Image (cartoon, rainbow, N blue to C red; front, top):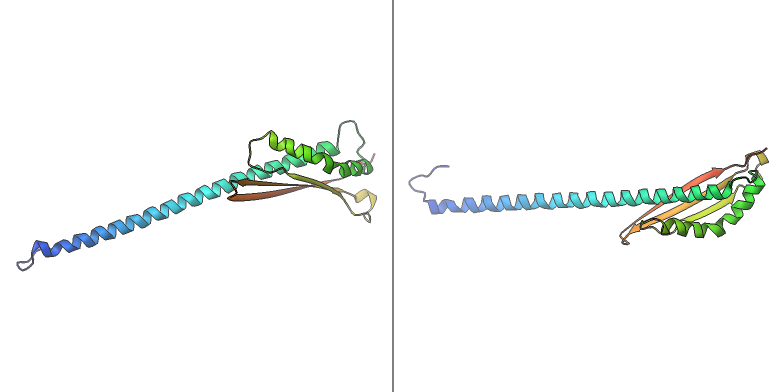
Length: 157
């Protein structure tokens, strides 16, 4: 851009204002998009951490159920396991509360359930299904639920 004899400097000052407004708008939009990306990354990380905590809590519940179903020096046949399975829900609440009390995670007590296979299955194929469900939430904003299931068979001696 050059100055002609007929163009004064005061007439060209409007171009600087247009360029300055354009730069401010572009930088503002760039800042806004970068802020959105940062919030999105933080939300994803929070959900991932809560999901891992819920998964580990559900796994801990299943491990506790396995120690209840297979105590040391006890019979491991299906009938004994079925009896322990029916008594699992009464002691599971105390165990679930202990799992939460001994950790510093924002989760509610996991639910541990045990159910036997249907009666019409042959004895050699009968099984127990132990399911633990854990729910973790952060300030009632995010809620993540994980469920883990273990299939158990008795040992026939």
